[in-house]
Length: 464
Image (cartoon, rainbow, N blue to C red; front, side, top):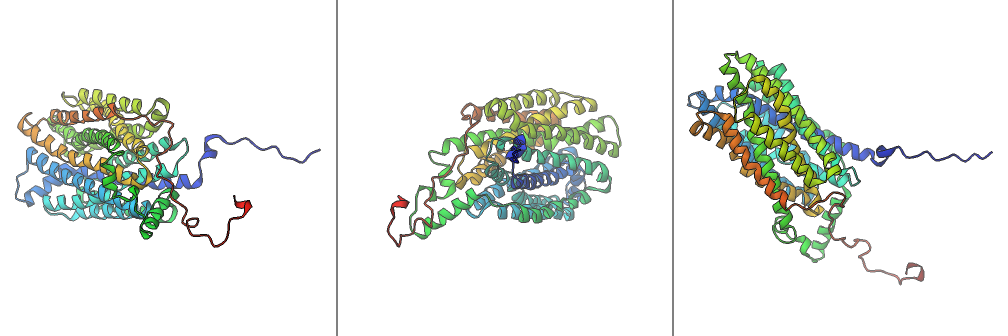
């Protein structure tokens, strides 16, 4: 009898994924979740924080001023996010993903926690701006990192799962607010230091992708040898010139539209629910509980929207997946916000709103890495989203201003009008190339530095 063992069949999709890929996905998802956690905490405590800080700043407390100065601090955060995302994205293309990712996480965690010690609205705004500088690093650099490590057919799904971490962070923040919100907004901001603990895990277990290591090494070798090529131009110049300019424009339009709609809704729905509670003469504690529960449902839908986008994109194509997210967002926002609804209707509709809005955001980070080669990938992602965030930074502020000026303080109508500007993403989608099933773009293969050295012996017949 033969002792030959029959090889067991492969275990399916799990056999295609390495331990290192799982570690990279875990690290980036945790980082993005804790980023969402810190960001959502601020949206939840915006009203109470402004109520306490405005009198210290010599400003009377009323709904209009809470809306204006609260919107201004959100705008400062988004502006910092845009500047920091671009800065850290450039650094990630020149110095690697992991170190830059770690530096950004520490920055946003520390300065978000320091906001707990602010005494005036402008101190809070300044700290939010610096926190935004670090917060901008996670999405573009994390998405580039996942795409470069997950190069198999599960790449889009892995990027979508990573992006779901942000909505999961919002969900955790809502739960924390439900449990600890009665202890005040300062405690809530203080616990946002938690993301800094993640840096140890990332530096220990998350590797630098060989692809970007090779691109950085090749760039340095060419520079040392005086062999400057087109690929050595400054990354921003390459992205804003042919042949990459058209892809930069498409990605920017998609990101800008998605971000305008998302931040307009996510910033102001807690305050809209507080207005509903005030109209019903509910206590502040009950209003806080309503906001927390609504936020958990909004972000539960967001987790599903984020995580499912990669699966939809693989099943139907990237363009159709975007169309689904945009349609769900438009219908649900137009149903919920322009009209007066009770708390129960918010609970039913917010998960659908979250599914559409978060799904569109997920798409920009699943699709974006498929447009750019590795030597400019992080910068490309950061540039497109930073332009979007700079434009978006005005969204929450504009919503509060037009609510007071045009709609008699109705934040729901104002939010709908600002979110409608997000239709710019539809224009970008009209020119977006379909990338389903395509390989990631790559840089021209650089000569191996060892093989590039002069030979010291003749070539033999065996080497020919």
